[in-house]
Length: 343
Image 1 (cartoon, rainbow, N blue to C red):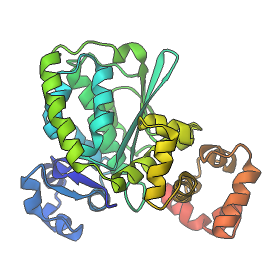
Image 2 (image 1 turned 60 degrees about the horizontal axis):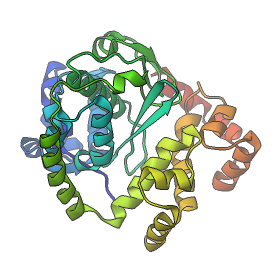
Image 3 (image 1 turned 135 degrees about the horizontal axis):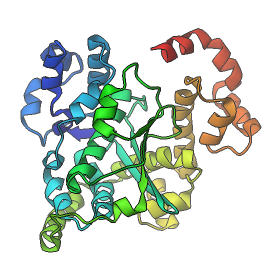
């Protein structure tokens, strides 16, 4: 399945590009995106092409915060057909759960998981493409939009505790501080927002139950028309990506996340000629190099993030998959890794 997003994901791209003296139409063409597509926010385009566009634009312009600049002016209305339902939710908690439920309508590469630990809430966010490549710009765009959405819904009475990024800090934090205004944690084990549980229970001043129910009926019909097994498999893969670093990527937890029982999930995976173990292994193969390439993570940390209780188990798996130990792989690619971390 090719992950797709509405062209609305590129809202403000042209403006930001011009401000940075780029030729946006040339870059769009290079990424395989027709500029005319941006005129219809409901058209769908490849998420991989969007990631390529954002990363190339950031590199050519020398602007490390390209994606964040795009997020600065986003509004609830930019969620398209989902915006009406979001606008009338009773609380921020209800609104975020709505985004989780209907996220595939606007971007099926987006995965969001809300984890509550005591009086603290972690809103984990990932953008997972078909190539499984990590995109700093796409992550910062997604986190920036999520943060601005929370602030807009609560009429600016939104006060998160911290914002987390798995990548390193940019040379200049001015834009991050302007957009988020909270404690910034780079080189973290997850991408997301941490807030108190009381923040999620704040009332939306525009809440309207009748209007929310009307909008939900419309969206539920739309989902029934578009649902298919290939999207289910990709959704399961996204859930594993997000739950694995939390130590919760079990078939029981994933089934619960998708509101089905374990046997139903197994039957659907079998119908798609795969199983949970295969999907787990695929995700581990894709994630492992993201963390091995980041010198901030020790091999023990990488082992833990990938769900191995013992580093020796991780090493055996890595050798079985790639024919070399993870330490030897890092040593062999040392020069390239140092260059990447210096950027």
